[in-house]
Length: 161
Image (cartoon, rainbow, N blue to C red; front, side, top):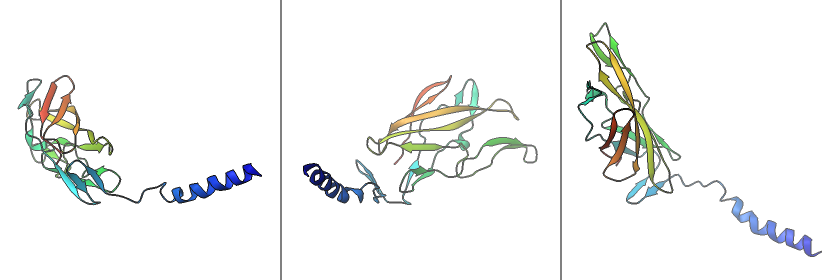
C-alpha cells in the first residue's frame, strides 16, 4: 500500500512541472541586452587589417553593419552570399547585399558567449579572389569580439550590440 501512495504522490508532484518542460519564454536577456523575438542587434567591424597574406582585403564585403535578428530561439542572419568576379560587370560582385561575407552567429543563452564565422575576401589580382575563413568568439554586449583568421592571425574587431 505504501508504494502505491508514494507513486501517486510523485505523480501529483510532477504534474505541475510538465507545463514548464518547454518554456514559452522567447525573450533573450544577458547583462544589459534584452531581446524580444524579431528584435535585432548589429554586427560591426572596426579593426581588421587592410591586407592579409600580402593581398588587399575587400572591405566592402566585410560583415560591417549586418543585422542579426533574435527569432525567439536563436540568432538569424540574412541569407549568406558569396563574392565572385563578374565578366559582365568587369569587377567583383556579391550575390547578397545584406550578408556578402556569409556571417553566421550563435550564442549560448546562459553564458552569453558568442561564436560564429564569416569569410574575408582578398583580391589576388584584378580577376582572382581568395577567401579566408574568420572565426568569431566573444561575449554578447561586450565592446570587442575576437576574430581568428586561419594562417593570418588574431584580430580584435567590433561588437554585436
